[in-house]
Length: 131
Image (cartoon, rainbow, N blue to C red; front, side, top):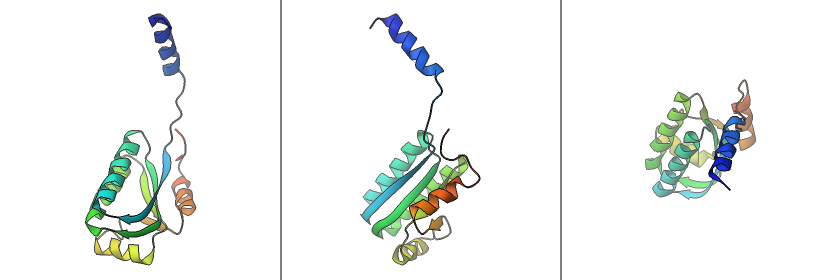
């Protein structure tokens, strides 16, 4: 392909409307130690940088969270809100809720029974699905 053809293709792609995901669900599982929470936080940062401002953290399959990493999740959720989005939690067991309380984060998130309910809450009154 010639340079001119590549430039023409690039211009055509730039001219086409983009379709970006503004909402996603991040499903977590197992025991979330500080390294796992750091990886989740890093993934949240990448999603936000890609324009995804609505996030559900599905904790249905999580058995434990290291309370020392919870403030990282809270700070990321605050960044989502500053950018006009939100982070909802789903599938939080009583045990995990106790850990969130101990870490001072029990009121930092809206919590839903399952990821479907959390996604529905995100979409209420917002065009949260596509941009």
